[in-house]
Length: 510
Ligand code: NAD
Image 1 (cartoon, rainbow, N blue to C red):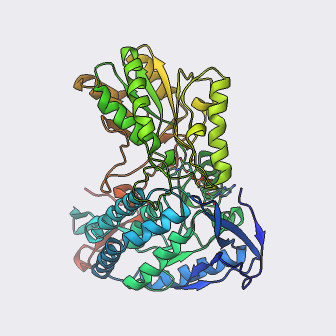
Image 2 (image 1 turned 180 degrees about the vertical axis):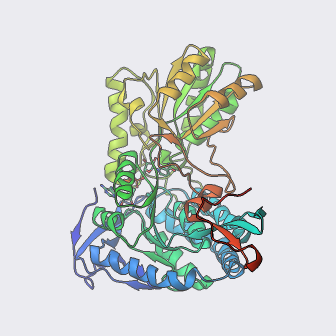
């Protein structure tokens, strides 16, 4: 849980910026006297202190969103679309600014941070089509003189609670469709890298979004619980780890809210003996160590089938010394540090436990970690991992790739289907028939065929199965339009005195 520092609203440490809430279109300094530290993971230095909200501050944000909702829901679709286009233009122009903020608090390398902002931009582009996305159905003459049509209306104030690993993109998955649908929004971003949310708030204001439509409350469990229990919040979108996702779903639904809660992952990449081994090795290194493994779609387990195993492990091993680990601000860095010192140490503990539990440590990231106080850990490869080992069972969320050797395709897909998570999965093969059968049989929400990180494009929806998703609605794409609106069906008849009579029977259509 967050380390808490006690400080008054105007107290500030030199060289450490104070990160405030954003309520009703302006910065609001926190009054709780509780703050959390924010670090530059590449140097290990504390650079910020984020306000942690009280229940009253959450109330104030919900009240601002509620007030704004009354006029925002009346804004025409044409104007909302125009505004989304303005936002799209500004994000596109200023995405490098976002990338620098991401790198300085999350640690991911600049090119990856830019990639995050660009994938988020796709969701905003999708939301620009809101007039088409909200089109209803119309049935003329459903019964004599009676027409029936459906409309979708916004929910009201909706909240988003987001993880540290995509501080710009994951909030975009939520606020872009939510706002386009006519809702107002309260974001509770990760307290580990909160500055990107204020960058977003200022950009939305500059684009012309009315005050109160988008608000940010920073905080920990106090703020999250206040949102979950708040009678003025109609829906909660959550992305984060599985235990918290489960808690959010159970608590939010108990309080009568619509909830979508995306959880953690343990993504497997199966490599069949007929696969192109070099291509599979490139993909495994990219998907296993990109963003230091801190992606919910990172490949964590490589399932090498039959004869694929030895050459695959050799090909990956040969690539590892070339992965340049360093400060994400340096253009030649390919992998940055982990988000906090505690997380780095926890990730490193899986190399030790893997070795103790019988895995072969092919590459030990602890031995290739750059010097300095940054939260770095080099790349690690564990071979001969089995399903009882901690490295297999837990979501490590770091640059540790585990190889499990399987005798057959059936054994490999059995591993995936028996795993409690079901976010992403990939199959590497040249056999189209096997690939098609795999897509039919596998228990996961996002499937890659020779694609290691199958994050759907913005006009499809994103979400896993099993313990990777609580609730039945995936993020962004068509499912988000459904999630952020509710349906209404209108049955209408225009006065025709000639057909009017008293009839106590149940209405018939024929
Ligand atoms: P996390 O679950 O620790 O935190 C997510 C959010 O929940 C944060 O805003 C945090 O403040 C809040 N939170 C944390 N503990 C809480 C508690 N006890 N009560 C109430 N709220 C609490 O996740 P994280 O470490 O920030 O992010 C990494 C996790 O997110 C990984 O498990 C990763 O797989 C997952 N993730 C999933 C997806 C997906 O689409 N499925 C995408 C990105 C990240």
